[in-house]
Image (cartoon, one colour):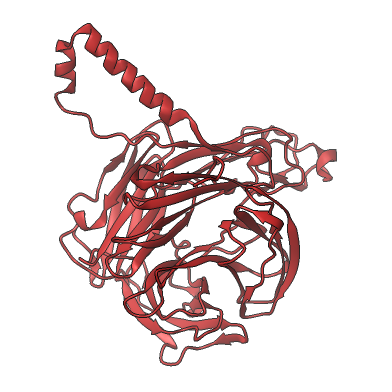
Length: 518
């Protein structure tokens, strides 16, 4: 592995959100081009993101990548640094008593060792040098760490990070990718499992200097599962905690919805779903419960699509199901509507849904009155040599979004505009080891999904970033698929592209807004 050092952290966060953080400075009325009392749209000046621990496999090969697009109006100074989360084990209950009896020399040696470990954890794993050029770092085996990082100044607006891991054999073999995300206080993961064939972990990462306390709720086909240790899980300061879902309950169920609720503090969360036969991938959090959901970019050669959905509360709902195909919105035969019972996880096999064409699922509750979360599990390849990936309900790209670790071959960018047509601009950045950026514009027809031929940097060396910006119309949803073939198995991973929330509207008033943050 020869890529230069770097990795992690994505997206600036919305000013009005309750958790995570994003700071902006008070605008100068003349510089902002706004009259007093109007709103100015300014780049976020501070943000933070988290990456979970990539793998427990000794065969894993992980690439971390970090990138910030060039943003007009951003500060000319700043940093973007990712560091290892402290992987601390529980202290021995006899440690203090033994310490009292230690000789001075032994105590000093232990203190030096602890100091060395702290220093190692604090070293940057990845640090950006300039906006517009991604950087990457590589790590082998099970020692690749979870990452915690912050960006400020010129690097904060649109900061994005990705980790991509290839596992050659064993449970979860294949390609596993996840975009690093901001800390929050609540997450929904439909599509997890406690079945014997699966090894699913919920990864919790705490970026702060105080402990976080987390409850993990599990919902199966008959409602909430009885859990033994799902309440009051403590995640130590600046550390990561993987929790095996099957240890939280004695019930074995194929399809489970995981609800993570943070009692105190905040965490980053993602589910790693590993299968004995069909590989594995990361299951990112679904978009917030809503009466209208879009699951973008189901691969056109998908052999099986399994939809898992859940509605919080007691109300039942009949979901209307449509597929946004290249020709427009269509209703899958035999799956026009799907019935969900309140508080119960439901799963539906949709077969070869896309039938050789690009497609995105659009789910709608009557009048949008009942909120739902959803995700699909996708299989590619022939039986015996299949690989799996997950696509959760996604948030729209309001202004800009970025996908990292792209290659000249094996990258598919899928874009859908289910409600109305849209025009987008797509920029391929310079490569991590060289290349010249390229930009193209595309028109997406109303109600369609298109796998677009994304630009590739001229003279590309290394991996590169693809940044999607909305120009008109919308809303727009997108995902990026990375694919390769190893031993006849179609390795792949899919990441939805949420808005990077790198810009915020700030009232142009006389009050000091320099300390506003989320």
